[in-house]
Length: 479
Image (cartoon, rainbow, N blue to C red; front, side):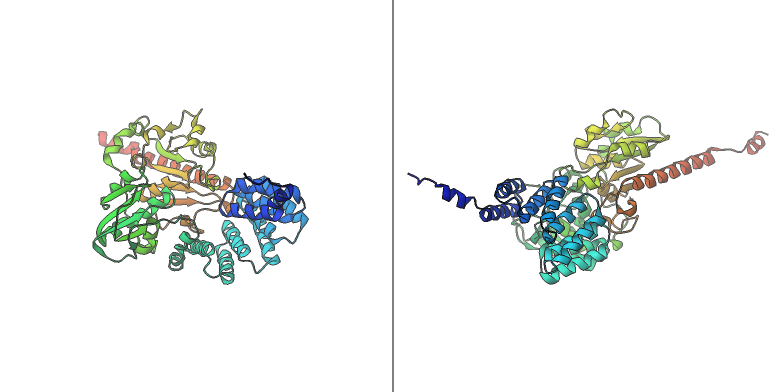
C-alpha cells in the first residue's frame, strides 16, 4: 500500500525552485509547451519573479508566439530593468519580427549589463547578422568564444558569418561545429570519417543532412568524390533520387531513413563542397545537373498557347514547416502585381499548402499536379524562359541547371547567398534581388518588376528590328 501524500509533501514537490528546475530541463529538451505549463504553476506562487516571466517569454518565442513573448519579456524588464537575460531574449524577439535595429539595441544592453556571459555576445552576433552587419557579428562571436572557447553554437554561427563574407578558409574550418551544436542531429554512421583522400576499392557512404536545397547545392561535389575512389553510396530523400541519379556518378542511392550499408568511410553531404570544392570561384560554370529528356513530354502545356510570350515560372514559399520560412516566403499577390505583364505567361512551380493561393487566378498555369519529384521540376524549368522565386530548393535546382533564375531575398537571408552582391558564385545564371535596408519586400519586387519590364521592352524592340524590312529595299527587289 502506497503511503499517503501529505499536503506538506505536495507543497515541497511543487515548490518554486523545483518547478523552475523542471522547466529548465524541459526547455533544454526543446519541450517548450510543457515548460510553459510548469512555469505557469511557479508563477502562480511567485507572481513577482522576473526570472519566471523571462523564461515564459523564451518559451513563447520558441513557440512562435512573438507578441506574447514581447509582453512577457517586457514584464520581466519592468520588474528588474537590469535583468540582462530579459534584454537578450526580447532582442531576439525583435530580430524574429524583422526589427534589427531595435533588436541590436536590446542585445547590446544585455552585453553591457552582463559582459561576462557568452550567450549575450552570441545573441548580439545573431542580431548583427540579421542586420547584415556581418563583420560586427564576427566580433561578437569571437567575444563569445573568448569567454567560452570551443562553444559549438558560437563556432558554427561564426562559420556561417565567414562563409557569407566569402572567407571560405575560415568558414569551412568552423563549419563542422554544426554537429556538436545540434544543428545536424547526431547519428551513428558506418566506417571512419572521410577527409577527401583516395578510397579506391573501398566504399564511401554519404549521409544526407539539412534541406532539399542544401542537398542540391552540395550535389556539385558528388562527381569529384566519385573520382577519388571506389563505390559511392548516397543517402537521399526519394524526391531527389531520380534527378541525382541522372548525374551518372553515384553507384547506389539509399532512401533517407533506410538502413545504411557497411562502409570503410562516411561523410556528410554538406561537408563535400568544403572538402572538394572549397572555393566556389574555381567551380566550372557548366551545369552539374541536367533534366531528363523523357520527362519533358509531361509539360505540353508549356508549349501551348502564345509561343511569343515569355514563359516565367514562379515560387513564393518554401517548406512551411521551416521555422524561418516566414522571412523567406511572401504572398502570391505580390508576384501577380509585379510580373503578370502583357507578353508574359506565368506558370506556378509552387508545391504544398501555399498552392491554395492560386484559387481565383486561372491566368496562372498550375504545374504542381505534374511535379512528382525534382526530376519533373527540372524538366519544367528547362522549358521556361525564366524562373522568379523566393529562396527555396527550386532556386538551387535552376542554378544547378544553369537556367535563368531570379531569387527574391527577404530579411536575414541564408549564408549561401552571401553579402552585398547581386550574383552568386555558386550559380552563374542566378541573379539576386535584395531588400533596401535589409528588410521589406516592396523594394525587392519593385526592382525585379522594373528589370522584367526593361527586358520585355528590349525583347520587343529586338523582334521589331529583326522582322522589319525597309520599304525602299523592298521596292528595289521588286524591280
